[in-house]
Structure formats: structure tokens, C-alpha cells
Length: 191
Image (cartoon, rainbow, N blue to C red; front, side, top):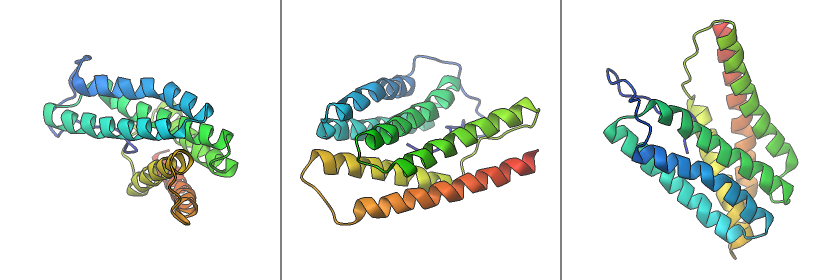
């Protein structure tokens, strides 16, 4: 679930098709969000972990198919939306049930709100905004995915690798701070 958008290859504009296999897979990921939240809230983290892995596999599949067959305008909007909806809802839900620290969820959600708000503000004042994810932002997304997966697996299965969750919490916190600061610096140069 990369942080960013799918882009059409150079010289190949995004298709206006709506019903494509990648878009169907992405829509399925969006539909999985309330199910994953419900599973965690009813203390079925094993099923939520399996659903989270399936969502990750569909994300990889729709990305691969979109690169091979061409991206769609709808897909460039839905794919990052599906990723953010799933990760944000999992961070909030896992925090609500005590599996992740509150301060971390606040940090992650605030960074995302700040980025989206900053892009909206830049567009409002007329700046051209290219939404290209930074490398540290991609690392942050990978760390977030790993942390959610580990938290769900530890709660749902008898697996408890020592210090892994603590290390991932630290990785998410650091990359969230660094990527948030980098986006703010990039945004101030665009004004």
C-alpha cells in the first residue's frame, strides 16, 4: 500500500474507464475497511489480520495490473484513498482497543491531515501541486503497514516476536516526523 498515487507512464494519459479489474480490487479494499474495524472491535484480530493481508495482496495486484494495462483517472484517486482509509482506520481502531499508543495514532493522523490540508491550501491559492511521494514517506507507509500487521498478528495468533512492535512503533514515529517535516518544507517552497 504505497503512499502516493499511480501515474500513467510518460506519454500515456490515464484512461477514463471506470469498471476495470484494478478499480474493482481497489473498491473491494475500500469495502474491507468497515469489516476490518468491526473484526478488531469484536476482538477477532486473527480474522482482521487475514483481511489486512488480503487487502495488501489486492493492492499489489491492482498496482501490477494498472502498470501493465494502464492506469485510470478513477484509479489514481481511489488507490491512495483506499490505502489511507485502511491504514488510518486501523491505527485509530487498534489504539481504541489498546494495541497501539494514542500518541502514535495522533501523530500519524495529524501528519496525513496536514499533508492533505496543505495540498488543498496550495491548490486554493493557485499553486501547481505535483503529488509525488517522498522516499521517506514510502518508508513510513511500509513501517505503518508492518506495525498494523504485527499488532493484529500478535493479538490474533500466538506469535510475539520480542521487541518487534516496539521497534516498529519507533520506526513509524521517526518516519512520520521526518516525512511530515519534509512535506512542510516542500510546501513552503511552493508558496
